[in-house]
Length: 172
Image 1 (cartoon, rainbow, N blue to C red):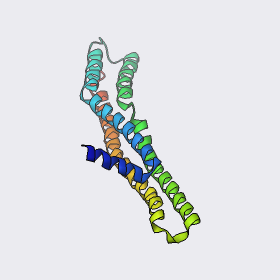
Image 2 (cartoon, rainbow, N blue to C red; image 1 turned 30 degrees about the vertical axis):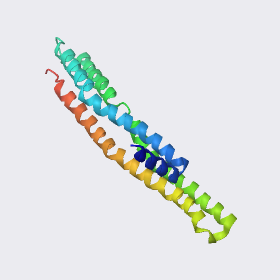
Image 3 (tube, rainbow, N blue to C red; image 1 turned 120 degrees about the vertical axis):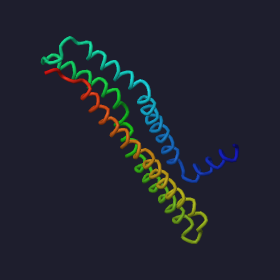
Image 4 (tube, one colour; image 1 turned 120 degrees about the horizontal axis):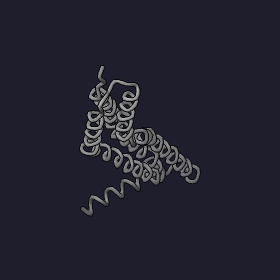
């Protein structure tokens, strides 16, 4: 276990301080993704059931007022389901940008080494090159890991909203 932690620390040091920003953003993004997945498994089902029960308990369902109540029920369940989705999408967009920030800071490091030592010290330049490439790769991998689930959550939100709207039928 200790070797595993040392490997992670070495990797983080290889990428520089920007890699810590990407890791922090990744933790926040995955917290929100997992929260939404767990929400879909339990609390969302209970919210849908409560909305359906409230709708079925109404004596009439065809008036304008009933239509407004129906829209409010669909909206209230949908808002809770959509929670964090814009933030997840923002994290997905920020990960590659932080990776590019790492590229810029790494290249600045390379240019500083070149200015001091010239181009003859390849070993000194290697640290800056790794600081330039590792955060870029990490930012892309982090973004891809959240991108697929962000799309899945968006699709699931739309599907659940449509299903609820269909189940809250209006009497004609």
